[in-house]
Amino acid sequence: MAEELGVFIPYVGGIEHASVLLSPLETLCTVEETHVRERAVESLCRIGSQMRETDLVAFFVPLVKRLAAGEWFTARVSACGLFHIPYSRDPATHLGKFAAAMEPAHLKTDIMQIFEALTQDDQDYVRVLVVEGCAALGKLLEPQDCVAHILPVIVNFSRDKSWRVRYMVANQLYELCEAVGPEPTKSDLIPAYVRLLRDNEAEVRIAAAGKELSFGSSPHVRSALASVITGMAPVFGKDSTIDHLLPLFLLFLKDEFPDDASILSVIGIHLLSLSLLPAIIELAEDRHWRVRLAMIEYIPLLASQLGVGFFDDKLGSLCMKWLQDKVNSIRDGAANNLKRLAEAFGPDWAMQHIVPQVLDMMNNPH
Image (cartoon, rainbow, N blue to C red; front, side, top):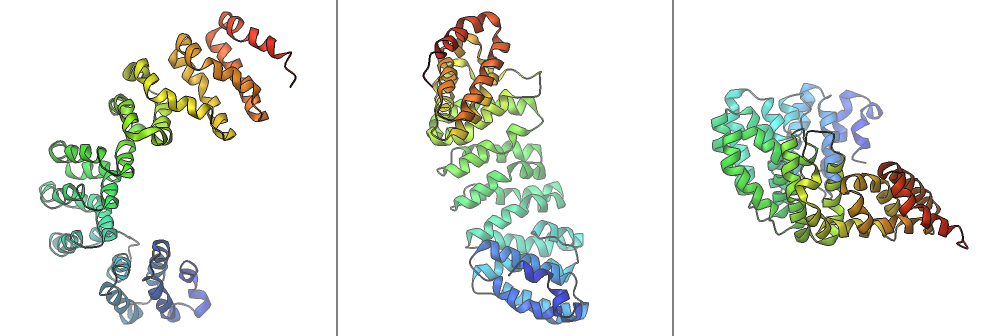
């Protein structure tokens, strides 16, 4: 309902009757479910941006004021996404973009007062929204003002009692670094980042560790991240290692930058065998056949990086075992995998390690 009411202006008689849609949407702006509120705010923004100026003043502004003064934080959160409509027709939804619509003279006074008040809000959901606006707001300020007003907020939020707020700081870290500049990043944000990597909540650690550093354009950043992956594995535990660290490791194996040091030279075969290899083997024997099939597709890539000796010791038996899998797609994938391995390791290796076992399988009853 919240979503559809946003396109209902033609069905209530046109722009001159658009105000009749505000009442049900105002109610939906106060419900507990976040997604409903967000859709209601979006619909109100869509309607308000089309309303006549007189109707905007007569109906929309009072609605925003009622929500902003609401007893429950749900109403106040929704109001944050509506202020820009009566002020400007700019379809922004965050404090930072609302600030961008204002005259510079008001930015350091009115907006910063609102911003600082919101940072003290009791509701962690409000503080999460404030974190989202920090980077955008910081880019509008002069560097010294950003360091004075935004940086302390970020550092404090990195220690916030709510893990959701800390998670958002970890999620926004790259943008926040851009906003405050290199020196404050080095002196204040890097220690905060290290603290987030050691956070008690796994979700926060994962957000900080994964970030988007692994997809960045800098080979030095990727190499630095590669060097700490295996150290994270014992801390993350088996499940999180499989879910979060292994995909990063496989991503590094496909690195498109030939000048980078090999991931294995950074991690080391020994550390790999102690930490990530058990996760690889567990995936290769997963009870869900689609997981096993996905792992098969990575085997030639792993083999080319690991080398023939290490591969034969640790992963060779798996490749032959897959040929006898009860799922046809796995057997097909395993056969194609052996073909690619033979091409990679050469005919002598294939004659020694593949052909004899395949000949034995010719007598298999299945």
